[in-house]
Length: 65
Image 1 (tube, helix red, strand yellow):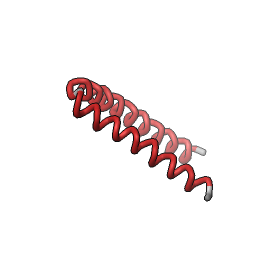
Image 2 (tube, one colour):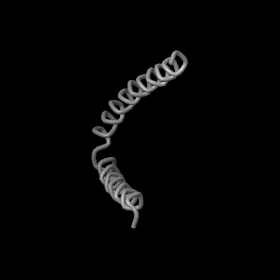
Image 3 (tube, helix red, strand yellow):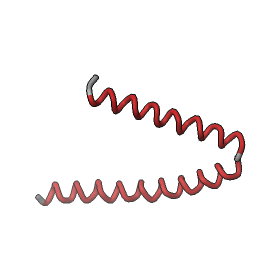
């Protein structure tokens, strides 16, 4: 097995386990999940803005360099 295949299987197992845990939490703790998702959404907005800044910096550096 190649390293990439091992990594892929590991990722599937990890995310599969996380998905099962998340589904169980949604079923038992809807309020907790709702607040967690709102936090996640705000973090996602921040990281999205940050990646846009990085892209702009890369373009700027590419143009000037």
